[in-house]
Length: 300
Image (tube, rainbow, N blue to C red; front, side, top):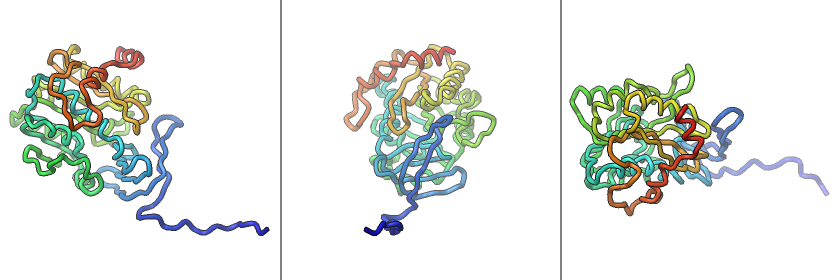
């Protein structure tokens, strides 16, 4: 029997380059994906869109996974519905989303007909366009909703302008990439984790809720700790709450830090929405139950 030595080249299965794509998570630890790169660009940020058989389409910024089409709803529903439902019913009218050019947070906010105005301020003009082309499911039910205003700008600088204009918001959502750790700063979101930025937010959102994602603490403990310390410098400690949501593609629970000057934010106060896949009033209450090692990290 003749031994087969050579093999035929793989047939072309579709557009894009099929690769093994790795995301470094921690020391000697990475997540790997096999898929097709269907978009790539180096501009303000390094952006790649990967198509994977399990996760669907995946957006990477500076080699860090931002979301997948399979489970992004968990991250965005936790980011939006918990802070809204923590407030007295119908009290949130004006919302500012810092970052959020992927439309996921605005999609969830606009599910409340009582909300009158939603600003997205994202620094990268490419992100909204890429979402429209590759992730249309992340757009609001009505992409032309008159309540929605997209501003392409640095959210830090735009917040200063809102301050000068005397603009007041009921809810500020900081939906950004993770901040840089160390001396090198390349992430455009870095300033959104600063004391100066939050001192501005405290003025333009004086009586409302301010919420910020702060990574997955199991592999990013320092982001959780530093964000919490930042909030304690700017806001009264009794107004600061931490909650969590398990996002499978992130490899663990994502942490959210929330400033809420209102009573009992752990108890939902609005009518439960039907148009959600993750959020329920039961999930709302459970989200504030933290593992012991999270609590210990926050106390250090």
